[in-house]
Length: 177
Image 1: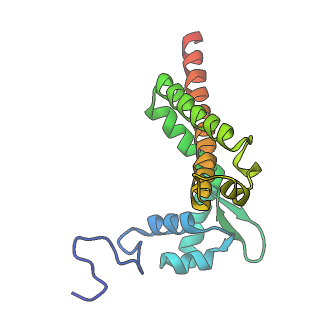
Image 2: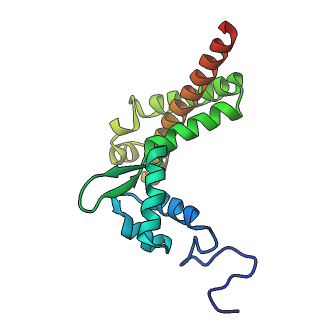
Image 3: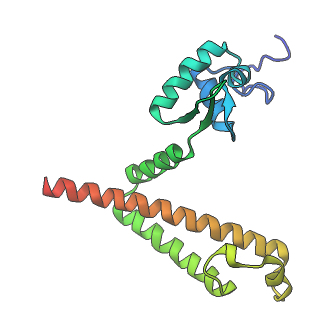
């Protein structure tokens, strides 16, 4: 067995998609792409022919997974809106309206506590250095941790609220239909 063969374990870090089929490798490469990238560069990362990459990228574009930017050469980037939509749909499918409402309430309580603690409407409105220097209990690391958690709670609440609205909209349609 060569050094690069992983017996029954995950692939080596240098080759994270080596055991996947080409579609999976291209998809995985797209997930890691943060800026418009050529099909050739994606093919290099996915270890496949550029023509094959273009074929799958065309399908992914049709599905909304990637966005194609025309040019010479054309570039592709991950469509974050697709993944956000997908996460919201999964929440709506996996949780009852009551569970979604409970989570929205929990997150709203956490957000309200941060708003009161920092006397601000959002994490962006907080001067972290000033907040840490003005507090005997919180270090700068504590403040930054709070601000990150606060921002995450706001995003998560929005996602859960969209999922709740999706579930209640679907239930209303079924009841009236």
